[in-house]
Image (cartoon, rainbow over all chains, first blue to last red; front, side, top):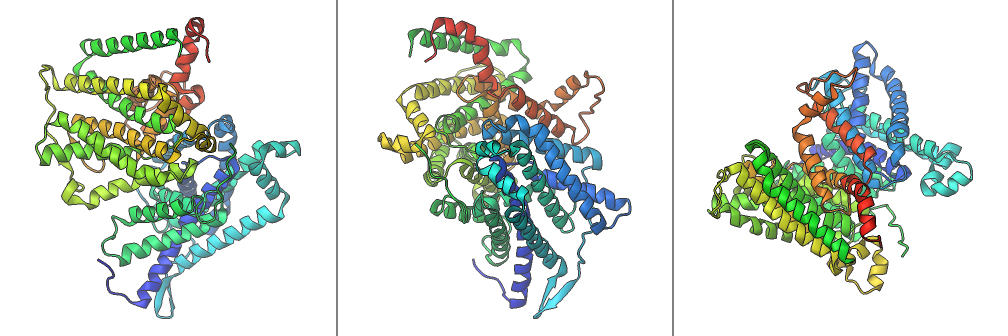
Amino acid sequence: MIVVAFTWAEFAEQVAAGLASGAVYASLALALVLIFRTTGAINFAQGEMATFTTFIAWSLMNHGLGFWAAFPIVLVIAFVGGIGIERTLMRPFERGPVVSAAIVTLGLALVLNGLMSVIWGGADRTFNGGFSTRTVKIAGAHISIQYIGMVAVLFVLVALLAVFFRFTKVGLALRAASLNPDSSRLVGIRVGWMFALGWGLAAVVGAIAGLMIAPIESLGPDMMQVILLYAFAAAVLGGLDSPVGAVVGGLLLGLVITLLGRYVGYVGQTLKLPVALLLILALLVVRPGGLFGRVAARRV
Amino acid sequence: MPRSKLLLEAVSFAVLVALVWIAPHHVSDFHARELASVGVYFIALLGLAILTGYSGQISLGNGAFMAVGGYTTAILSVDHGVRDVWTIPIAGVVAGIAGLLVGIPAVRLSGVYLALVTFGIAVAFPQLLKKYTHFTGGTTGKILTLPKAELGVHTTPNRWLYYLSWAIALVLLVAAWALVRGKAGRTMQAVRDSEVAAVSSGINVALVKTLAFGISAFYAGIAGALYAMSVFYVNPDTFPILLSIWLLVGLAAGGVGSLAGLIGGAALVYYLQNHADAVARWGNHLPGLSLDPKQPGIPSIIFGAVLIIVMLALPAGVGGLMRRVLRPLTSRLYSRS
């Protein structure tokens, strides 16, 4: 039932692969947490938004731009797009029940998925990422440079976001608006625009996730669907209101799933996800807020 | 509750029964089959309404309970030769037990966490079905026998499915109505509105929440069994992940708080999934719009757009719309408490 042949070199490679996929889950989970924390709603369209921006990057690269030239352009487009979506589509649902907002994001996901098929066609295509696919030899193991790059991008992203939230006025306003919208309005914060900003940032983070995973999985309209599921699991694991939790949850989930799938024969490829979800459920029973989340004290 | 309100509800129910009875004579055989599917969704939505609407536990996993019911029917009728009609209550009970098992750990979770965990169950379940092939037939699944009219009824298979589904649906509607109107319903709503207050009133919150899951799963299991019978084939893709999400959409569209409005929700969910081409043709009447419903991607765009429009136009669902429309009548008969 248990372990197959084991070498340290392969273990290191599996760990690298697990952390790299974990970095993608973590990024998308971070986007989900951003929107959940600012607006309280779950964005089911996060994956499709990321795939959409990745397709835009693909088109730009098809017209001759290099990956790193297209990168900032796509991030700006994602930012503007995210703000636009919040201000138009989500605005009527800011104050209503969260379920309605969630269903609207579901509708958005469907629309985006369909648009991608219509504009770019449903076939998968290769995407050349920003990192070389060569491997580097570290202590006997062949670690892909791409994996190292992905994890590095995640850490840079997290650092930038942390600086933004802690040391800038806008970051403070965003935190205030999500914590207490009514009081924030009283001190002059435009809460609606803060929500929009949250969506914009989430769209950017999602775009980065898409750009990182596209070289590994081929680029197609359904690319992010399974990854979004893992991202939800990672966000829940880490605590839905904790960005740190999203990152830790994502990396942990990526690691656990890769290692379980490789080393526990019974689990194999089919049971990877159910087992991971079972573990998360077990954790939540013990800690209902996830690893780093806080369960709000309930008033009677 | 006021006598006049009770009378009004009884009359509406009688009207509904009459409509259900005569409808097959006025629609084609195929449409009878479609209406049967609407009935199946209605049963599943009744269960979800009890769980999410009345006891406040958001579940994105009822599709998995439908799968439990559907597979129970398949396994019993294919592998053990049980007559399909008798598998329906068994499927309900088996699914109900699964619901109780899920409900026990779910007591500790609330809100979005519960929603995502149940979503995880919906995602994981097809994988489990694929793994345990000995039981479930794996990805190939099982083929059931074609439905035939039974119990002394002589009619076409489609109309038989219609009558079976809707007879069960109406019985379950009355059961749900009785549950919700009585003490049990008020207990559930108390748990939904404030757990702390409910506990201090002496309610066993864990028991109520777990039972709600069990009942909801029972309904879903019956719906799953009927669905399996109507497509006479089960495999892991018969009850996909998206099904659980469609159920929640149906609940939101039907309107929480109105059991009959759920019929509208069920109709929306069924017709949206299966008649994107009709919506596209209708949309083509608008100036400037020219949609080819056969092009891949267009159906998705249409579903999504309709979903968004429905949420914008009917924030309280079909039930809310019905209440608003009927208010001039009902406000004269009784005062709203």
